Length: 227
Picture 1: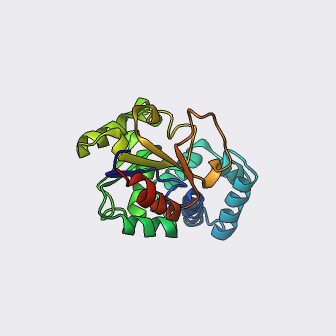
Picture 2: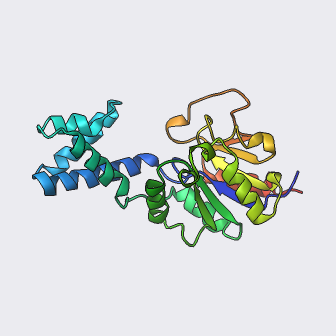
Picture 3: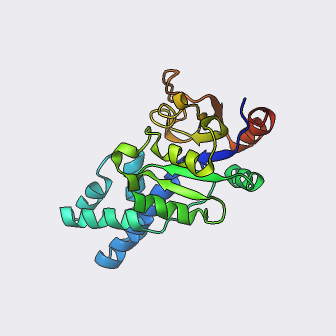
């Protein structure tokens, strides 16, 4: 077994709880509506959350209708406020411990989504001094988003290592592992967030599953670190 030399992580529901970003965005939009239209910020926020918990789509449209304010232009503005706000989000405690413990490793992020949104998340999580680079796949075109191995191949070249010397940790088996596992990259699935109970075929699943980063620390020290 090759020795692990590089660590790569997904962001949402892997290093922090994505729901906290959603709620942070809802608060930003609620404050915007309070300032612009004198709506009750806390009530609007609670309405956003209630619609989310119901599994509704078009949350902003639904809530704005209740105040006779629904228009495509205002919904677009709310979406812009949501996407551009500076979120109040924090690393999982075990993720923070792990990053500190393995800070000597080259550490990268690979995350899909709107690049402005994802960059704001990276900035809020204070990754600047913890990682070498965040690859926001949205900056490279849809075809290079996961499951494409494009960003992982870039990391391999930057570090001049073999795929089996790179460990990637993600949470979504729909796309996180299927593109890179056949190339030899080591894969670890974090059982957190909306996909934690999802089970797919062997092709889509990671090599190893974990429930927290303390487990990953043990695996790295007892298994992946062996040469």
